[in-house]
Amino acid sequence: MTPSKRRSWIFLFTSQVIKYLLLALFGFGMVCLITPIFGNFQILETLVEVVLQGFWRLAIVVLCLMAASAVVESLRQ
Image (cartoon, rainbow, N blue to C red; front, top):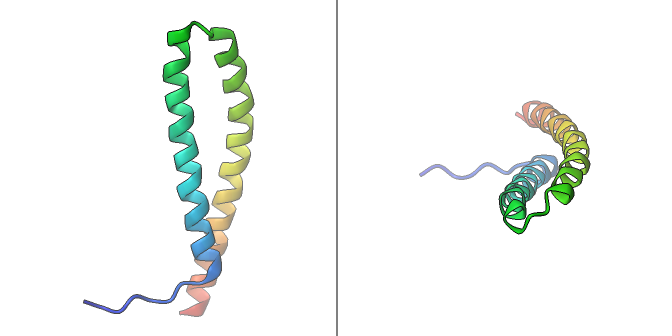
């Protein structure tokens, strides 16, 4: 077994952000599946519009963080 490499703080932060972003996306998917059962189609439509605007912005920020962490890790090696 090889010893684990020490990662930079930006790499660890990016992995945490990705983990929680995917967890939030999973939770939102569950809400989208459960909401029509109660007959709230109007609320679901509004919720999807609002959440998708924020999700795309967060996804772009995460992609930038991933690129920055890749550069930092490659410079450390």
